[in-house]
Image 1 (spheres, each protein chain N blue to C red):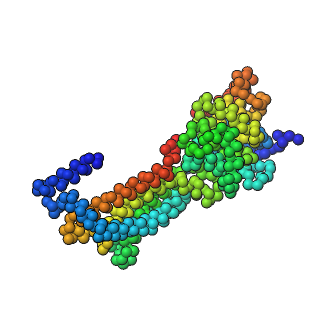
Image 2 (cartoon, helix red, strand yellow; image 1 turned 180 degrees about the vertical axis):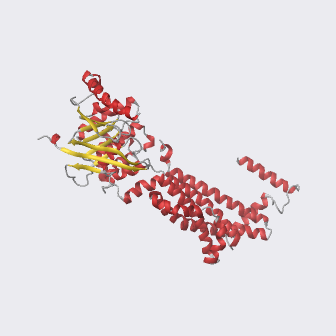
Length: 260
Length: 245
């Protein structure tokens, strides 16, 4: 039986509201979806629709006002449920690449020597072996994001949560890193929830795409991405790709207009 | 810059000999220098400088450590900050030298009163800068720490402290400068030993050349402290260059 059919995460009727001067403001309303084992799920939505809030709820950094977040499998050892990758400022500027990537293991009391054994292979996967003793300010943004991704994979979480990790990159670097991410993902076979406002990116990367409405955000549509893996960048030129892209854009366009 | 100083010294030396400057108010550099040697040899300079440094050190420790701890706590807790900040704002501008008499009434005229005043002076810059240093750490760093499993002590040692270190060192720099200044002032007013006491005594006995030596040594201490802290800064904060993205 393929573990691909097992559900890793289930979110039900998530509702998150904040008290403000003008009363209660809903960020998320009635968000329901699930993520399967080893599935790459992309969430697209207009800015301010609550995508980041949703990730933080799943990561446990915020509490839902109501609704349920259920993880369906137990954790082994000191495995953490989720690992976040941020768009910016994710790395600690005062730590080297090696220390940054090993941070998630350091917090679990794993000795420096033992950490090296786990950390170095992942750093090699992202191609930064010659930079392990460098500091983030000595790296390009693309390299920094690779360090952040390495750090997330090293802790072997149940789900990776990525919040527009390539949002700050130039278009070309972004494409290359997308390819690299898929390559690494294939080796580690983890569930990923990937938030972006770039539709093309979401279709290229994802098995399934969730379209969120503007605030208060909820899932407007779920689209299964039909392309086989491995996918190279050339599929972006296929007519099927363009069709899906256009379809999703029409939905998203409505939602983005509401925020203008 | 060294050239300008040399020229100035030569002009000064000659000026006294031709009668431009009174040797009482402006003893020639040669006399000042020989007095300097004399005071080193009879241990007066060494003892007094040592006394001043010892007071600065005690005050810095007594005032800086609580300032650091409270600053770190205030930086992390908005509630604590709001409670304590008004007291800080009220007491910080009061010149601590001015409350020396009050301190002496409470603690006597001995060494402790002096150290307390120096400590109070050193307390505030470190407190304020440390709190600010913690507050300017990007919240994302704390979110990452929490997500990756850091407990309270790990967050402190690997995020809060290193993240606020640049500002802490800035505070230390200020505190050190002020502590030296206030130490000299306190010694001037009420001490038997120390550079400040030397300055006052030299003035009282009209030994102007000793006065100049004391002033020069005080200035030299200030320069040395500044130099040391700059090195400390560069060593610890090399990563700060591009943190502001």
